[in-house]
Amino acid sequence: MIIRSKAPLRIGLAGGGSDVSPYSDIYGGAILNATINMYAYASIEPCDNNKIILNAIDKNEKYEIDSVKELKIDGNLDLLKGVYNAIVKKYTKKPLSFKLSTFVDAPPGSGMGTSSTLVTAIIGAFKEWLNIPLGEYDIAHFAYEIERIDLKMAGGKQDQYAATFGGFNFMEFYDNDKVIVNPLRIKNTILNELTNNIVLFNTDTSRISADIISKQQKNVIEKKKTSIEAMHNIKKQAILMKESLLKGELHKIGEILDYGYKYKKQMANGIATPQMEKIYQAAKKAGATGGKISGAGGGGFMFFYCPGNTRYNVIKTLNNFKGQIRKYEFTTNGLITWKAK
Image (tube, rainbow, N blue to C red):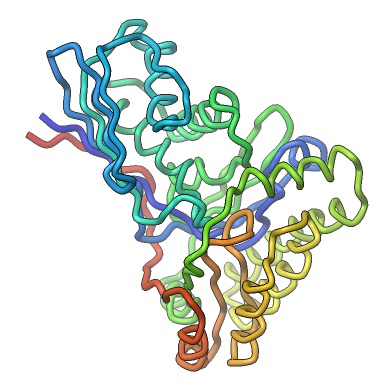
């Protein structure tokens, strides 16, 4: 028997960064994101040989050890180890024997929420295997605890919830890790037009998001006015984006993205590299009305809103830069798990 799961990666349409503590704890955060048909996959094969085998296929990394209650966190497949340790500590109270294989459709540092989505997918596979009674909020919060508390990885809260719930969601973040997920009912005509108009571009660069996020957190702790005001405006952007999508006012999407791009760069140093700035301005000159750096910034994916038929000229322009256009579709489903014989 094989237990499988998959969880979708996400595009952060607006509000990115306002879900990061301590800003979200002090002021409250708001995010609007949408999942796409790029996934993190996890498969568990139960064993009876008292072995644990971890296999990150996309990274070509493998780890094997005799079955124990806790795996050492040492920089080698820590996300996989962290989930196992938490499952044993919280639920089974005893070692397990299995082979865990994982794969992610985007590389680490892409800005698509890869690490959080992978953690969510792995939790889903263990949940399916062990019949652990976890609801959507439980899974997302568990994934957040593993990454941010157990593994001490810097980051926000949106990715775990996006991966678990799926679809278009307006999320609110408050003190004491309170999160409210508001699913948005987007009409098919709007969804189709959004898919047509949003061009997704992989810059072929990656970054360590923790570095940028740490700078952002430091700016809030030190009460740097420019950064905090920028985060206020980023949160406002999420509200504007929600209203535009629900009202079908797609002509506003580009300018809302452009508004957010301006303020996101003020949240911390290193969010927009000189090369990314060149790409952004070139895309706008080609007809895009706005765009966004996905995730924390500094590398990874970017996307652009291209109204009318401007997408073709924008794509032609982006092809002059190192990187690739990535085809995608928006998805409505979040984490999915199943068993295969």
